[in-house]
Length: 316
Image (tube, rainbow, N blue to C red; front, top):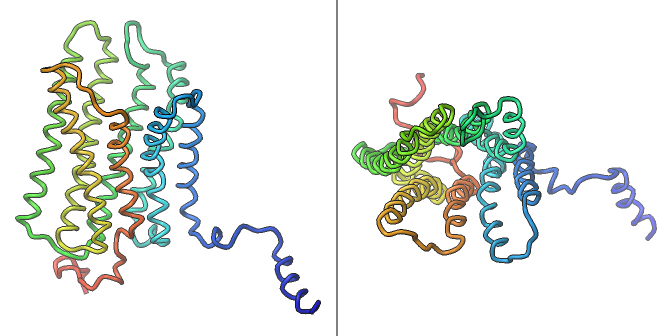
């Protein structure tokens, strides 16, 4: 009996201290994304005051879901496709850029304060110094860049073709919604910079914000066009492609909703919205993109029964 117990025990002891096998079996590429998500949570905890109000604490946690989902989108990709850096390089770069953008958001406050100390705002300026403002615009621009790269990757991973008329209708509808949001953004921005009391640096930052908003809308719109066309043409897994389309469509839809609310405020006055609605709606696009990759987006080429059209095939 003793001999039967010493064999397994000796084998277990020989391994020494080690992580659980379930953790060591996970792809190594997911851990940088998990680290960024942990840093986002840590920054949220560090910035919280006393947790006296349960309602505000709850909605603050809901607002944290979006940044965490953004950071973990890359982990979802590499968990389902460990070889994505080789097989889906554009998607791997895109989700990495999403994580970089989230990391810069986590450290934005100390970096902005440091840059403001190096090059402070000029006299009469309302916003931050020019270098800190440029850093903030760069940080914001990383997300749409990531979305464009992800859309390119999804387009390359597709195995089906589109109906050209359907693709045109999808593109027209999405671009129209983005154009409405951008037009209103331009109008409000011009109304901000026309008065003469703004410092030149403030005017430049406002114009930079307009350009960044256009880039942001372009990123979400391009991803929506590619993902929605993929879902409509029968790409698998269908749920993942639908989630990938729903996220950017909701993001653009929220922009249109914001425009409508702004118009109502101008015409009627203050609009009472449910507490926490902005937190929930703001987090959904990032959550849906995470869900798309967690659901297996994109389908591996070997698993797809539908071949690419001859015109896109590699030459023999």
